[in-house]
Amino acid sequence: MSASRRKWKLAFQKRTVTANDYNEEVEVWKTVFHEYGAIYYGSGNEQRIAAQTQGDQAASFEVPRNSCTSAITVADFRILYGGGVWDIRSFTDVDFNKDVRINAVRAVA
Image (cartoon, rainbow, N blue to C red; front, side):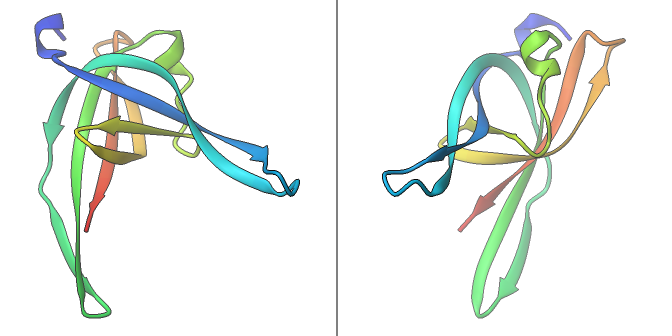
């Protein structure tokens, strides 16, 4: 992918567990790196749950493959972009290991 398509700055956060003041385990998210990427939006999905309308927005993010993006796992990483939190659902290699495509979903209330 050409660098000109990578216009958007994405923040990648990793889940960690730490102890609070009462020595209880607490899940926290910490930004571990930023990367410029291309974004391809999918169609939204709406569901009516308990008389509330909830939607989600799907998108694919393409970023260059490097040591940071190679370490992404579905369980421990998420993306911050456009004022929302994007939960990673899957990722695959593209362009003979030059880029990584990350499929993610953002919940919209």
